[in-house]
Length: 115
Image 1: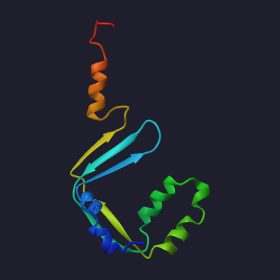
Image 2: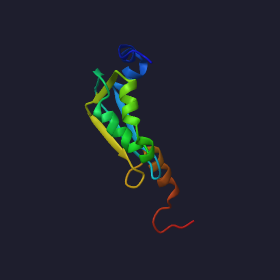
Image 3: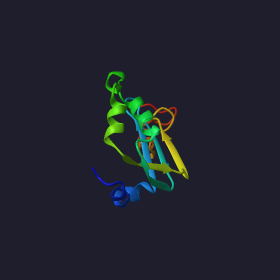
Image 4: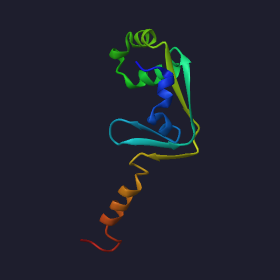
């Protein structure tokens, strides 16, 4: 297991200081893109936010004992806090990536014209 101080020096840590992507599995895809400064802080134990997110991601039968096991395994973790300066939601119902929107416009015939 890496020392939390070493984590701060990884190239990905420097990238996280600029942007973050959060997505939800399953159709339709829902992705939250966030850009802004991030802080990385070594914390004692396991942050409650980590356990809350894990609980949402795990099936109920996998949760039994998970928190106890994680708390026993990690004496320290690195908490990442992003201060958003820019954000965009891609939910593929009301918004999509610009490249996808462009393709859709190209495939949709103008009004009154049928292929």
